[in-house]
Length: 413
Ligand SMILES: *Cc1c(COP(=O)(O)O)cnc(C)c1O
Image (cartoon, rainbow, N blue to C red; front, side, top):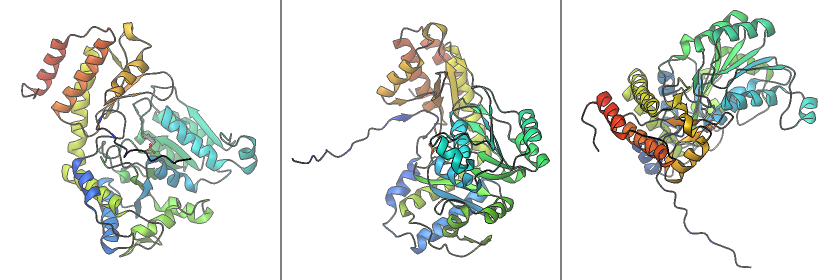
């Protein structure tokens, strides 16, 4: 039988207007494609990794020595952060959407005993893990965290900073304070907030571990580097118990980023093969973030999100989210229940919006790295057209007038 050789894979340009990945910055792509084929111990690759480590500490506002990045995407960073959770460890996890739900599953996998794994291998019910289920669309509040930590007195507490599934901002201050009061080590999924929100790790001393991703707020490519940061208390706990991982053990991984025995050293040592392309891209995305400044970027997200929110509200949609990079909405009453159909129509023509990934089905429109009036206007108009195509009523002149009043009359067609 002849084997088949497929034609070269062509992937078209689409408008990334979802929760992530975002629109990769052109400078990042150029850095990726322009990197030479250097091995992972070549001097400039190692220097780039050290510089990335220092830039990450600046962006994230932290003196944590164990601040570096993990090859992969958000789940790679999160798996690394959860690696110190051992079978039988007492954990309280808050789940208010798709992603914190998967984080809670990861925690049950890490904390389950061998008997609990054998009883339900893909969904172990670890008795040492308490998952507090907060309904879709609602935030995790400081009072909820205080109550649960007072009741359970866990070793670890977990929350997503921004739950991208339902588009909710959770109470980071309340979480950190409650962790401090009850002596729990806080773990935060900061996958969708890093690079979008202006906050400093060191202002939240109750939190021992943080994990993020390359391809959302940092505008880098997926499968480059997922930032993580750990306090000394976290590293001490890990040193005491060990972890069931070589590759995702933060102490081993940090060595390639020039962090050994809690100290910065001049040069990284081998942990795994790193990619010069990925290092160059990640390095450029961190430079971009620092050059723009987080305060300015965070303000820009809030401004443009408000325009998008008001425009879709004017189209009759109901917005239920409060994340500055993402709008989660229900369609107008006469189109209710047809959210998935609308999303599929848009995606079929390269307008990459998303549905929610768990019930109820809602539409998610994101603005990662789309922070200018031309991009927002384009997103609003494409969305309005999709509503009209499904038989909804759209007053294009009113939408145009709204955009012009918010951005001035300088919008290019
Ligand atoms: C996107 C996201 C993830 C998953 O990240 P990947 O990059 O897809 O691995 C996890 N948590 C949150 C809050 C997210 O937004």
